[in-house]
Image (cartoon, rainbow, N blue to C red; front, top):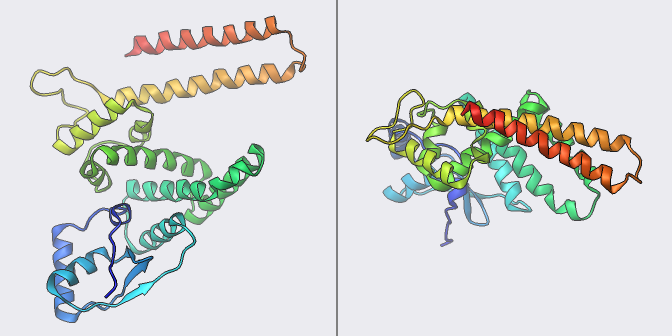
Length: 276
């Protein structure tokens, strides 16, 4: 008898069924048997984790279907597309899976980076972003924001799978814009946030308990987003200025340009620091 494997990333890709829904599925399988096959890739379940758990517990026969993929990324994309088309997802769940789909596509194409020019690789990623935007009927910018959001949710999930589950299940009062910046936080702050979510103490409108200093993650992350936007503007202005000059720019003038760039960053830091 073949050994069926459980992959935790695949298993937890979508939020677990709540107790009521799981009970209905269990009752249906007990009464009618397991009518849908368990889908496998290299003996790893990629669809049917709940059916498999119920059938195994009650010793109910089940069928399996083997899928063929060239890589783990291809299998992951299949899972995303299959589950997204099958379930009614909340806005934050939909954003997460769109972003994960894009990130997985980038990983799948990543091996080209060493073989082609970076400009060509950027164009390739742009084509992927546009294709996914068309597929999901959103803008390319939305796909980019979703990618950051999914990175942030996964960063929380590394610390606490339960916190990730709560976010995707909509049990946490944290908005998508705020959540999208979590991946830019230091590891200690991500851990602090994940622990608060898991313990149920995260509340952007309430001060910390037990005499601890209140830390407003939402305001902090919004500040970081503004900081990133301003840095990008300053950097773009510097590069535009340098491109207009000749390739034989004098070292002294180059140093002057970079010194001005650093001065602007320091002023920006001072202004943002005062806001916190």
